[in-house]
Length: 52
Image 1 (cartoon, rainbow, N blue to C red):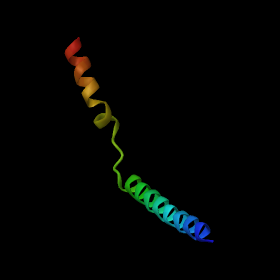
Image 2: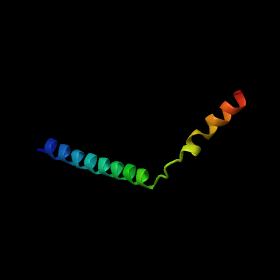
Image 3: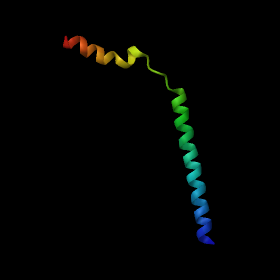
Image 4: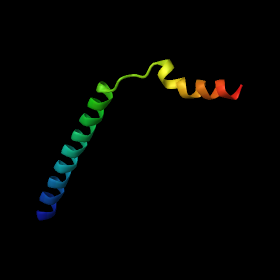
């Protein structure tokens, strides 16, 4: 019986931790600003211009 209680408590803690991690990840993804094409590829464009 003690083993069952320990397993149930461990499962509850793991579930809460996973839920917290997932919520934080989704919140960060929602708040992140999408980079424009120019912002994403500006360093590569500068290198290509110097290379020519």
